[in-house]
Length: 68
Image (cartoon, rainbow, N blue to C red; front, side, top):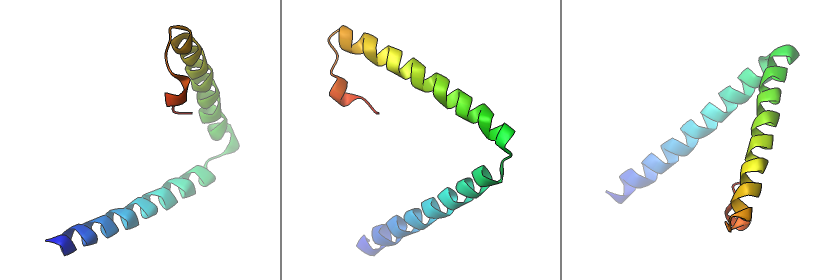
């Protein structure tokens, strides 16, 4: 049974790498205008996150548990 888990873990890591490679290829194939749309969304989300973290810490939350 152990060999099954080892094989399954290996399979998942290979599949994850293939997915990552495919997504990177798709991103690189996008036109700059299309990428700009996603970059804008990222910047907006980062601003939202920073505002929420500021509020969270002000209410006594632990900033060390932040995801960024």
